[in-house]
Image 1 (cartoon, rainbow, N blue to C red):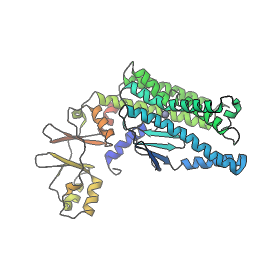
Image 2: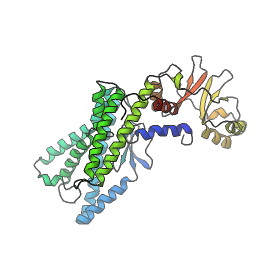
Image 3: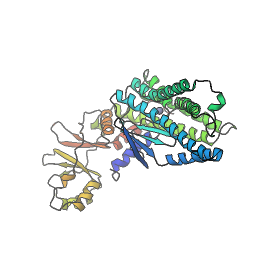
Image 4: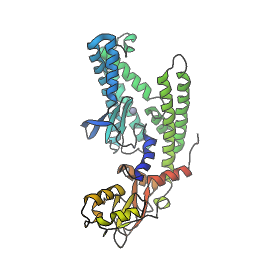
Length: 388
Ligand SMILES: [Zn+2]
């Protein structure tokens, strides 16, 4: 789907959600699968190896080859903790019937890609809290193992080869909990705050307040980053948090705009449909007559017989015999009717990973197409909730 416009429109959502740990994002680029656990793919980003190399190097300069090995082991253990954190989110989501197709480990942390966002604030709260809760459990377990009597300086020697590995890992887990509970998007704390607020008010209003809190925190981080205690890392986090708040707000407005409307109010009604009798030989002519990216196949009574995108049709016109039916490349998509709520249509799109759905009437005739592009336009013109 990478070549069609609805795919690009989906890019709107991808950008909105890309920094969020429970996001409607596609598989992260430059990542590859290392395992599959409980039906969830575990992927690792290529840049992760740069981080391994970096830790190996700083440990090596500090304590030689053995220290370098320890450095790599330490980094891998940190990421095991991050991975378990993400599984915390994924299993909590599963308890509410939300699938997690994959978890990707990036040098800056992990991303669990949830199939959809829960619309119930209590569920969102539990999913958000489940990640940090895993790190609390790990920290307590390490604390019990090492006896908990280590001097404080052992905890802070993260970037040197000295200090007990477990003590440092305990410190990392405490840091992961504290960092993730900062009440700002895209951290888990931002979702916790929003979910708590959303039990009392509209979702978009709750998001507006949570986003504003996040932006105040981002500004404080920004100011702190130029003080002697700050540094470039804090400035990066500040920017990250500021953008996270804006994206979350845009998504909430988008969802809110979709909520009160029906598919019939947003669908495209002017589009070109292809007859199921169309031969592969005639595909090129049909494509040349329209700039459309998605084509429904219909019979003479306008009943829908599947959908094909431009890219698939172009491929078919080169690969299949000229006499073959062009509709052989058509696929079946879930359909909605004009009375379906836009919010429901959006959920159906994210669940089926489609950026466009055919709209059919009660007798099965296609009457329109509804896509993420139309939803985005609607949310831009109707912005409920707080303005910040
Ligand atoms: Zn998390």
